[in-house]
Amino acid sequence: MKKGQTENQQPLIFVTTGGSGGHIFPAEAIAAALVEKGARVAFLTDRRGQAFQGLKNVAVYRLMAESVTGRSIFGKLAAAVKLYIGTVQAIFYCYKLKPKAIVGVGGYASIPAVMAGHLSRIPVILHEQNAVLGRANRFLAKGTRLIGTSFQPMLRAPKGIPQVQVGLPVRAAILACRGTPYPKFKDIFHLFVFGGSQGARFFSQKLPEALLKLKPEIREKIDLVQQVRPEDMATARQFYDKAGFKKITLKSFFTDMPEQLKKAHLVIGRGGAGTLTELMVVGRPAIIVPLPTAADNHQEENARLFCDKGAGWIVLEADYQPQTLADRLEQLITHPERLEKAAQCAYDIAPEKAAEKMAGAILDIVKGNQK
Image 1: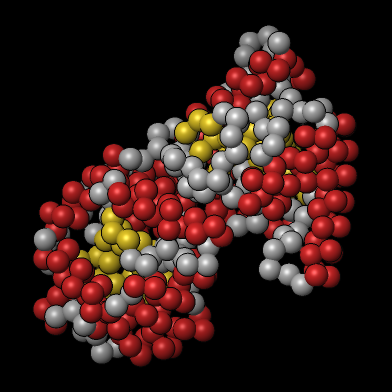
Image 2 (image 1 turned 120 degrees about the vertical axis):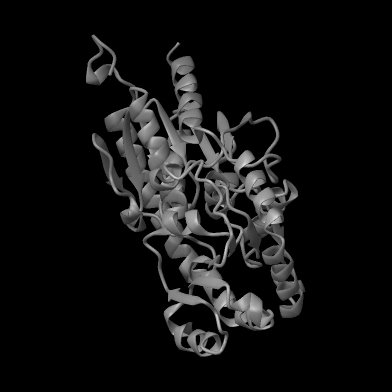
């Protein structure tokens, strides 16, 4: 807070999202940057927003919200009713707290608060994490003052709405790893495989066949760390028991993601925006297998922008051949200079101060609105 400025003089800004950590983490970072710049922030989320860790002096309000996609007709109607109730709740908070702006960070949980902003004529700013404008953000885009993007170009964006590329804000723990030197390859090759709850199934069922096709002298150098769903753990262990790897670590969840990324020579993962941004920030090369069922095929679009910059290699599930992937891995492991070059390319395209840039753009609009 600036000298002579009281708390009530600080602009209040609503930040809204919910659901998965992929939305929550960027929202936390934007909220923290706004607070750092002297704003007051309230966080509006759904019941799944429990992942929000909370920030000092940031109030958290729960709204009723539920996704309408992938449901029966009755399920869609029930979800629509909950979104309506959530919007009424958000309108009440707008009337009571009088925010100067509402920032939507994507997902269905952002719909009630952003709709309330439009209806209450409060400036709305959106942030889109993917290379394709998400369904919720497309629904909410009309009347929006600005869209902060993670990738450019961004597909499915409506005409006439200003965009600014700020990047995707990441967790502080990942940000602290920025600039970590790429590890030198001697006798151990660190291969890190992860893909979230949906992505892990493909990797635990399909990837072992490719890894077992590697030459024995290659396999004996590999320290494999892989995310595996609990129900697939026994099958994956059975595959890998005969692989002859130097070391194997299989887990269903990693609490030390920053450390795993730092030591990795190569990552195999999905094409979510959060995953790709973390790879950029740490500076690690990757083989990306986009989730084919991702809405609007956004993971493939994300992956192509990442790989077209030389930071990795894309493998589509429809084209997946175990021997082809094994050949690619052998080429990379035996030519580590290619991995070092890709690591540098990843680092070179990493967003810098994404949360601060987004916060600055939001406050510029708030100041303009006050004038």
